[in-house]
Image 1: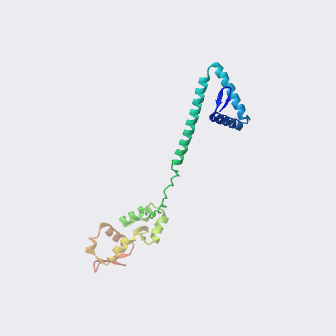
Image 2 (image 1 turned 45 degrees about the vertical axis):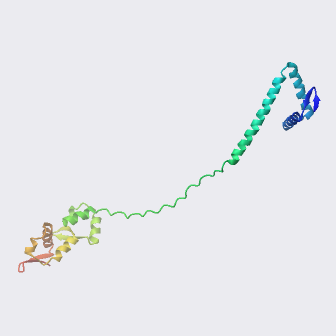
Image 3 (image 1 turned 90 degrees about the vertical axis):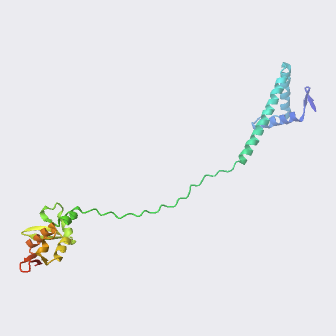
Length: 207
């Protein structure tokens, strides 16, 4: 043991002095171990004179204890980090591309004009409230037919017209059994000179 100013310098004291020297050197302060020991012993002598050496020693022991606890906490924290599993970001589920939705063909709007003429069977052309181009389209497509009766034109639903014409020649007794609108159509055909009444056979015939 080295003795200087009646204080034994054991290896622990020398280790602490060396540690302080390195710490000071990292901060740009260059002191030898002997310089540090000298300053420490000088400070100790001042404290000893004041009678507070026990307090300094107690504080020094507490500092060493705290330093040991900090090192232990660092080791525990490092071990805890190493033990934790590596968490990777969860990959979003792969979604199948949406199936194309088959588009329904647009529903054809009911032609109100056509429905009206189908029910009425025939109607004066000049009283129809529809564009003439629309009526011409229906005539060109064979849905309607125009009849001239006494200088006045009528549009006729062609399916009903052909249905009636297929019944000819038609006995007069059978004419009475026809629906009212079909009898009216028969009269219109007479006015258009497309059918006539045969008084001998008592039937309605085509011209």
